[in-house]
Image (cartoon, rainbow, N blue to C red; front, top):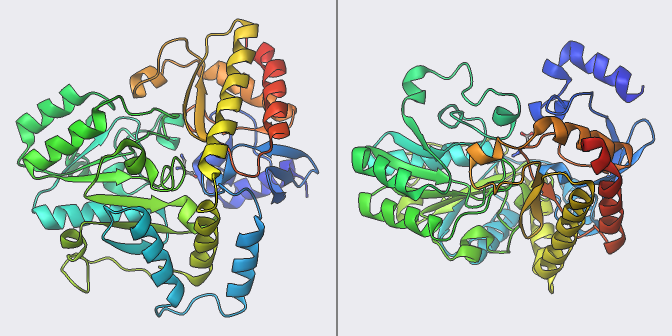
Length: 425
Ligand code: HOZ
């Protein structure tokens, strides 16, 4: 069956025809292609078309598709069984590797998704502080747990449903929001409600309103405010963990959170998440303490094998310098293409994650991200797709460069952008 017919069939039995809304192309119009296979930097659909992939499964595939060490590790693991519901040596290896790379994570618990990680970290923060209020930032997305679907980015931003239906009002009221990079605003909220705030959760580099780096001093100020008011600082590094640096954004910016959430890369493309942090906080998690959190497939041996293989590959040589160089080349190509076409355009990039916004203003928060011309993005997206380059089907997401992208791939993407900008006019 071709993509069109698969989508028709899927739409009859799966809401929107997809198992996660951002895949549905509704942010750019049209219908999604269905994937047959992928290898390296390329993804091939069931219609036989091949694309240079800058979605990378939304972040996990930093080694590229079907990377040999991951395939070998998973193949070996699967022949030993797929799940035991009992501990395995690999879980200890992965936990040790994570805690070594993230000194703020003195203990870590593996879960099955980023959503589970953030949801659980918030529960720990509430359990430890005895407070209920959560502070998050407009346009940041931390998965789809109830407390977090308030002014949410990613699909929330793409589909104009930042405040999801089905979240009890009483719960939504416990989430207060501030503008990303607005430390004065956060300070004012703490002045007014400091004693109620259990935690501040933030993507240290926002990736779900498009990429937005933290302003100088922003993360440091959050650290100070949380310490002063006895709130727990949670870094959601589900995207940035092992992406912007081996030690994540906290290593890059030198700010130590109390709790950290990881996902994506630590599972090497298999479903995984993790949360961890200060020993005193993590000691509250059952069976040590009274904060309950559990999971049948937590620490799944296949995901752990894929994650370990990925992290081991990332420890080798100068991978982050290479990722940064290729990210910078892609950025230059996009800017040159827009400049030549005379289109207002700005790129935010941190290492190998970047977003090109169709606006000439700086994008520093969700309000400025929303000034981007999304109709123009949609035209650009489709023009790129027609030239064999797959970008995120939404303005409010990141493009990811992997180690499988060669110089020639970046040059090809830049050339496609040069041709596609005319369509975006
Ligand atoms: N964090 C990803 C989007 N920015 C998740 C992908 C999804 O929602 O499917």
